[in-house]
Length: 298
Ligand SMILES: Nc1nc2c(ncn2[C@@H]2O[C@H](COP(=O)(O)OP(=O)(O)OP(=O)(O)O)[C@@H](O)[C@H]2O)c(=O)[nH]1
Image 1 (tube, rainbow, N blue to C red):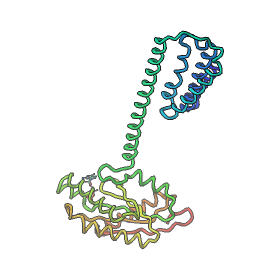
Image 2 (image 1 turned 90 degrees about the vertical axis):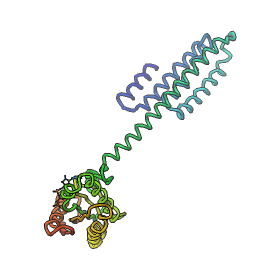
Image 3 (image 1 turned 135 degrees about the vertical axis):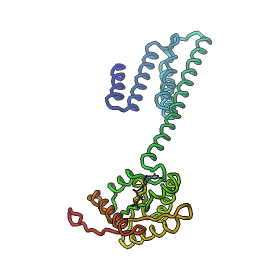
Image 4 (image 1 turned 60 degrees about the horizontal axis):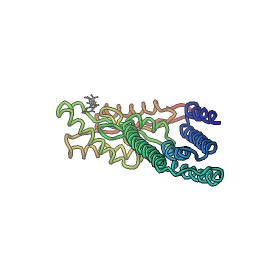
């Protein structure tokens, strides 16, 4: 029986990759061994010391809460066994030293289990915090704090929304801002522009950094006219508010409807609209209207 339980525990851990199940089986194995020892040898010698093995071990394996429940159940079973077997056990001599040894061993094991559990919890917490930071880094642009391109593309591809509009925003003549004022000022302009865009879009959509001096906006408007108003407001607000913080900045914006089954084609249309806005003198927006017929984007 012990061998079967031992093998099952290893199988649950390595084969099924279920460590929790493996720990429970291991505990059953220990309980079985302890009870067998107490049943076979009764209360002779240090035999009852076996009774102390399970509680610290259960905390070690299952943590404070579940370990305490298992320990309680186990000790109740030990008391039951003592009551049932008490008559057949021989009276033994009182041995204070032996009892002191057993208590010391028990306390040592218990302290070790608690220490292990506390350090396991603390490293688990550190790991959880590090994972949360990593998850944020994976979707966030360092400089502006906006969502990054990967996040926005995932968002578009997994969107359930029927009607989505997408806009691409590009800061006009950004290279000359860098050349004239230096890169740190250029970075500041990117941050401030991101802030203004986010402020204007507010709860109606999501702003991300597409790369370089380009931003992307996902807008959940139910009417094209609402989207057009947004593009107009973006161009106007950046023009009016940018010089409060530094060099005066204008943007060009291209917008279009987005269909997730035509992800690349939709983004290409948006890019085309942006190109039109740049070609026709910048500081303005353009929209590409296209229709979706069956499996064709026109
Ligand atoms: N400061 C700063 N500059 C960046 C960053 N990313 C890209 N750039 C700069 O952005 C500039 C983009 O220049 P261009 O692609 O020529 O575009 P532009 O000058 O805005 O010209 P138009 O698009 O025609 O208006 C390049 O000089 C890049 O070095 C960044 O994170 N920080």
